[in-house]
Length: 203
Image (cartoon, rainbow, N blue to C red; front, side, top):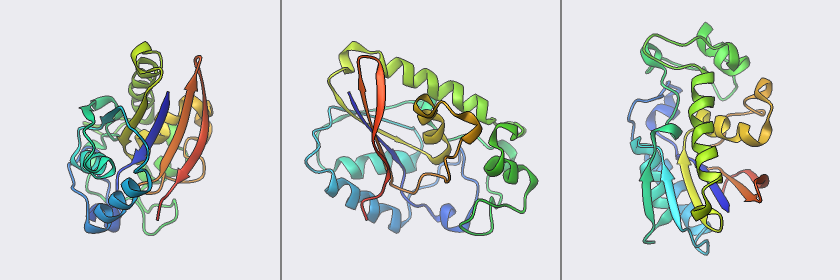
C-alpha cells in the first residue's frame, strides 16, 4: 500500500491565523491553486481510492488533487481536524512561528499533550485515538494492501495520524505544522510502514 497523506490547501482563516478546527471553511484562491499544482505533480499516480475528512477544505483539496480522475472518494470523520469547541475562530498565533498570545494555544503548539480539552471540543489524545483507529483499519485491510490511497486531512490530524510511524508523542509536531498541500508519502508492506517522502510541497 502507498498512502499519499495531504494537508488541505490554504484557507482565509489560515491567512488570519484563526483556529479552524471543525469550522467548515472553504479554500482560498491560493489554496485552490496549490491543490491544482499538487494534482498536476501527481498526475502519473494511479490512485485507487481516496479517504477525506468531511470538512469542505479537505474535500476540495482531494477533488483538486485527483483532477478529473474517476476515483471513489469516501468521507471519514476520524481524519477530521481537532474540534476546538469554544476556541474556534480565535487567533491562534501572531505570525508564522509556533507561538501564541493565548495560553491554551501556546500549549497546543509548545506542549500539545497538555492542551486542555476546550468546552465542546477535543484534546490531542482524542485526535490520536480516532486517527489511530482509522490507521489500523485501513493499513490492515487486505483489500487495500496493493492499492494507492489518497488521504486528505488537516494539520493536527495529519501529525496525529503519522504518530503511527513516529511513535514519539512527546515530539508531536516534529518541528512544524505540516505545510498546506504538503504530502507525506508512506509505504506499508507486511504490516510495516516507512516514509518515502515527508512534508513535500509541490510548489
